[in-house]
Image 1 (cartoon, rainbow, N blue to C red):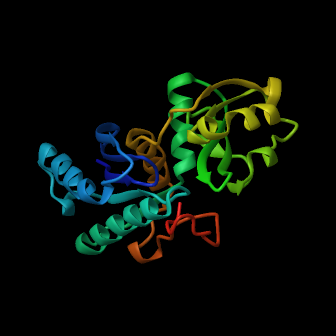
Image 2 (cartoon, rainbow, N blue to C red; image 1 turned 60 degrees about the horizontal axis):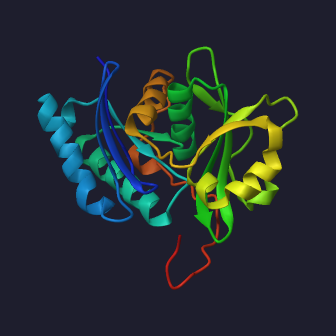
Length: 231
């Protein structure tokens, strides 16, 4: 029986979930701040409700970014701390992939264009395709770029847009994709249930790593200070 506890705090969503052999329990809150104050409590509540201890798990999963620099660090830190404490491996999951999986499940779309607002006039961008098994895989590399610089490969069929980048830069993104865009969910945020579907598949493929090998993915190498705060 596979048991995985997952957290993603890379965006406005503080989302925590517990996967037990395909069943998922989730604690999900949308708040611009306070992730560090609630994420561990959410983990404790889910474990207590299931009658499990941390040591009863097979692995942990974490949203490794891209997203808010502070949020990504919080999630990675929690996963590493719990992993070291219980001797558990960690499964890193792309935050953009989690967004895409949510759209693939909810809207049954094949091609998903994910965009998270990266501030400073940019988006974190990734293109995903839903496979026959229902799980998404990346098409090309994730990147951070100006909305006017995004592009779709010629072979991509009409796609669906998700993420806060579509709320912040929807006009520019729509102008780039034109008629190849079938719809948009600009309010979409990562959800632990979607992340854990991807994490469970990665677990079966042997893609968990020791806590010390989990690395955040920021995409942006340098943080331009805006008002003294990183994005």
